[in-house]
Image (cartoon, rainbow, N blue to C red; front, side):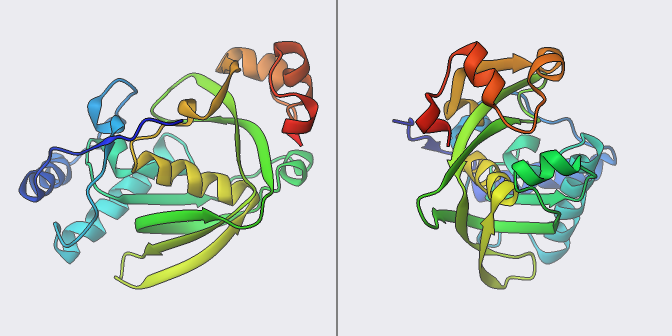
Length: 223
């Protein structure tokens, strides 16, 4: 059972001050790494702590940081901002075999505010994933194959969308960040690999070889 994270101790005023300081710095902020308390707290729901210009500027900055990393998602807590906001985008060129096995299709840029997800169906998929806040590591995580996401976009429109495959994995990973949950909390720890070992041994479209040689997930659980 996952630990239920405590709410952020930041007041709305402090959240806004933090955002203003980051925006005023004029440089890309560093990505907060595991061990920082902000990654283990429930982020505050967005309810107007920022004005429209500040929100737009923060979304644009988060997208820039995500591209620079590079990554396919970034949550506000990863910049030290305990606010329920994340940006998602996956338009990288991916090997066709890997894309087919992982059901990885392009995801156009999307900013999500106060997101929550629920599984659609009972399907699950297990693959390696990493995190910009746990640099240099990857591990296998079993996640819902399809999810329904309820969220508000950057214009204030309330939306509901269904995501499947790798897009669903990104949605779950980033939304979990806003609850104080890191992917390592859900990972098969015997699969944990640094990037060099992953690249040399386990960078296959599926996880079959890693599962057999590292000893995690029985056959039926990996399907």
